[in-house]
Amino acid sequence: MPFPESTAHLDAACLRVFGRDITYLPEAGGQAAIRGVFEATREAEDTAPGVYAVLFVRQADLPGAPQRGDEVEVDTVRYKVFEIEADTSGSAVLRLRKV
Picture 1 (spheres, one colour):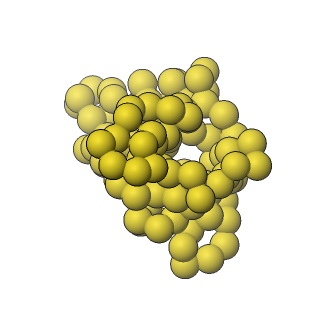
Picture 2 (tube, rainbow, N blue to C red; picture 1 turned 90 degrees about the vertical axis):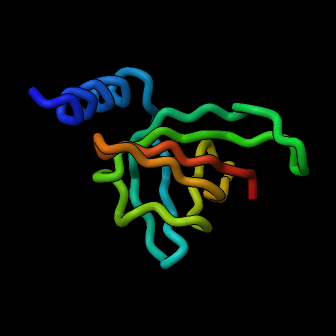
């Protein structure tokens, strides 16, 4: 099995075990119920607002390619995507700030 395919299977297993239900809200409109691994306070930033969150997702679960400005809702708290780090296995880490 090629490495990207193996990684995609591992990503799916991680989402099943560690993921939680998230509402994804594209800036273009609409919404999608997805599963993602969310970490509320990841790393401190040098500038305000000071701390950001991260969300690990499979891009195939999103309604379209993730874009800066899209939002996610986790436990009634909204976050805006400000950075996207995609990989060759079809997964992405989205860096988020509270809205």
